[in-house]
Image: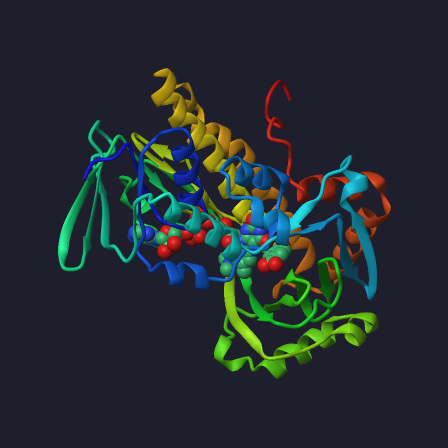
Length: 397
Ligand code: RFL
Ligand code: PHB
């Protein structure tokens, strides 16, 4: 088989890239290790920035998101037993975010791909990438007992943190920066009305918690837990009880509990690969960088990588210019590091770290109170949360 761009991974990065390339007449084949149902069963992100919303519209898959997604003009910070609202719209000159689950977004992209009969190979085994340091890249995989090879011009590594693409770059060619946090997030999804119409981020003596949602009838909650905790040990009742202990009284009064639909523990990590390109292999999304979920940036960063990568590849085919390809990594990384910094900072501000003594919790409370009360502080949080403008890094500093 031959194509122009072979995409490894059918998560949001790979599917969105495929869609944008197709819109501009560039051929792509997606090769995914899992089944489509498995990809859809992974409960992950929930908050989309305007840049991501615009890109989904550009890809022609935004209709259901606009119908069913919830526009959020603000969120609440709960610390020292008090709530403070961050008014995103007022603080950013009219910007907001959209609550729309990654599962739904992925489903929309998969449906569009299926309707257009674009090629996706699910349940591809032993995927490997070759020849990307030269001019004839290839992707090989096994399926139904047979070996297959795709010849292509470029490979897009959209295969997440544990994928094969980054791991196939020769050792020493990429610099990797990593920080692993000493706790995880235990997430629970339930068909119960959310405790509030906006998200609440909680800094409490018992640790961080987050009250989020997928719709007006479906809640998503997270609790900071030690890395040693196992999800099987957490009954639904224990989860609700711990959430109650972290909430304030109005929250406890409004909390509606019910059976979980999904429960899982995610470790927290900051990670960046530099550069995000090696020869004719491009890394995009979680394959190139990971943020702790506190700032809701992971999927949004993946979307901007894909925006830059699709633009660069389309420019290559349409205008025979490699300017975009050559600029890809630096353009992405300028944005990535800002989001990495924000996510690390918000994580540090909101969680209890096992090694910290009581004074650090006091520093956190003082900083949160400063941020909430100072217009400059509140703007700093708001402009990062809604996402920095795409041209933020253009021009002189
Ligand atoms: P994905 O989603 O990991 O998809 C990669 C795909 O590649 C496949 N794959 C392979 N395919 C072929 N061959 C191989 N060898 C392969 N190895 C892997 C995998 O099966 C998979 O289908 O990466 P992608 O597309 O870059 O998307 C990134 C996002 O999924 C991720 O950044 C977000 O989920 C992060 N995230 C959030 N981001 C936000 O922007 N807003 C949020 O509110 C938000 N909340 C979250 C999050 C992530 C979380 N977890 C569980 C880590 C909340 C949580 C709890
Ligand atoms: C979610 O709803 O899954 C979610 C929302 C906001 C975050 C992280 C996760 O910061």
